[in-house]
Length: 562
Image (cartoon, rainbow, N blue to C red; front, side, top):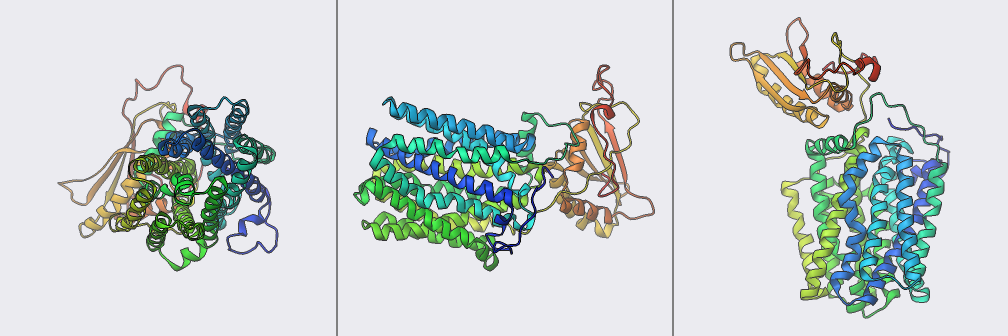
């Protein structure tokens, strides 16, 4: 576990398993309230930036690019940001990322005040702010599990969505008023000021972290580890694919909202703010009902219901020219959007162990932000060619068609988080090793009754994924043709240090899976394990310290011995 909660829950009306339960924890409550203000500022700036762009150009392409500039950094740097969040103190990472966003917002305010902003400068500084928030996201979201107990984690995820969407409900309306009365510069200044409470709260948070048992991974290796874990985790891959598609299609609403207000409703900045507020209010309603939806529907049924509701609502927005009808449709669209995104988020958070939580959440953010960024660019081009109404009708039709994805990419069931297993004792070593010694080859021999051969082989397919996502490569399982009861599992690890990490990254369910494979073994002798160094001389250098000088040994008898 990367950190510990430093406060005890207080008995209050927040107690229980409802969506407000995480607010009983002081750390979470303070950060949540401060993030609410930060989100409010970000939404106010988004209104100012989008409306400023409409004043500088009539191109729908450039108007939609404002959202692309804010969201594209999440797609581009999400995985490095997730790796950094897993490698370093998440509190420090969050502070640095917020400082980057603050610099971008302050610079944008200053240049706008001096009358020096052009469409290109506006997009560039929105990209800077987006980059800071892209770095902030994985560190913030993966630290939630350090602020609340695991049983309230789904509610905490929903509350973070509520934080953003409360801001989305009121921020655009406030932003519209600010822009209408004081100009875009006031909106940019408000964003810069509202970053300060979150910076202060995070600075004062005394995060307690356990010392690392193994040396920190290098950034490039950490990124590879995260990609490998996701690539060998079918549930996470399915969730990310569905998230990307939802972002690509559903991003049309936010991207084209200024044009809906201007061209379909013939309104101004205040109308734009009110429409975004309606969408955000719907999102809050959706977040408040996430718990009830999870109890009443499976993940796949819930996502299909959300796609159906959102597709219909987008169609109504496209055809309506009445602000009241459009606002009502946006409430429905916002609720469905929030429910779908929250379900995807919860699915990723509860499927990933702590050691890769930041990278898994970064992949989720890259999927949703990348979908929105790429989709926004596409919807802007389609709008230039065919108009706002046609673009939204296409979006609504595609959202309805996305229901068919459930046939091939069915949402996996999501329960409680799969916790990390206990640390294993280091295996016996009788030669001098360093962390760089390797590659290491591991062979495990099982003796399996021939009647159990098919069942054993099926279990080993799951064992393969568990080994590979935790760091092994070149995995294989072979059966002796002269002794059909003898099976040999074989895999590689790049170095001795990578092998120690691979051994201790297993979750409780993965350890149980390994034990299931071992139960097939028959005979009086235990399974036989060989650990061999592929290059025993060239990989050991004279100036390298012995393994025990660089790699602490933590003894434990728990878990699998492989």
